[in-house]
Length: 338
Ligand code: AVI
View 1 (cartoon, protein in one colour):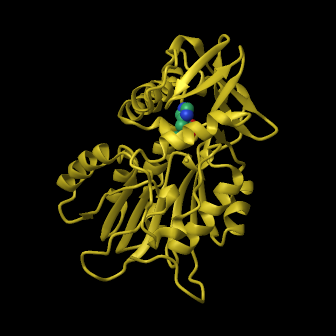
View 2 (cartoon, protein in one colour):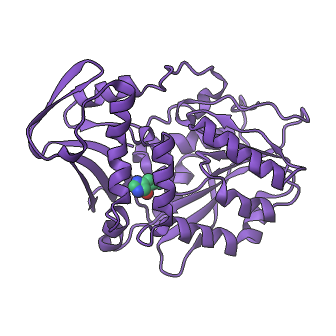
């Protein structure tokens, strides 16, 4: 989800994925290293080790988004369930640990099916099995896929299409550029016609709060950032020296985003998949953007994408927002239905 996240394809949902076996890591890494400025899509953070590090980030005192969003979902679960309505199929984009969805499922009335989509297949299967045990009446149909590239949603076991509702928590939309976010929302509005999207969005705030959230004292975010290099060393035969790159994260108020970089501490050459890359001291590899929105700005973005923005739930400190976006039915060819 990034400087180079390309959610070009929810609407390609009916097209078979042509992903490389490594999910495109080698080609995206090489392309990003050849470019100036250098950048790599943040989706490659999330191998098994990266997913665990991200889970640790979510527990950090400095990283307010997870606990704030979770508290909002818990506090407003009934009102959210009213928006979702009965007999819905819930599709979660980038499902991760399936923690937050439990709050929704507990409040939803007769949910028909839950389709968690996540890039990490192993993690997803284990989490789905645990959820099935807790909700024996619920059809849980996990989908291991990079939803930013397009997914084929499985047909409902009942054969009957239910009202489809998307769930995209965690402000993962912040890892898209605004153009990518708009495209994702347009495609989601098409896919979810007749239902809606529940989406968590991190808010613009005091830069000092943001700085702390992405520069935690224990260095977990730094380890998460550097895990990209660990992964490249392991999977692409790269020769990144971990102590020769520094984690660097700052708030860019003009673009309203946190930028995360790995900055070369010295002059060095690195080999990646057989190709050499020179780094000067201070040269950066841009690894992630995390955009922050104002409530009205995000509603305008969603409206422009075809949604009808509904209720918004925010915490008292104005740190985080959860939006209900209704997806009206449109005339013409239907979006992607299983
Ligand atoms: C997944 N995503 C919304 C996180 C964020 O805050 O942008 C990823 C993250 N990067 C550093 N810390 C957390």
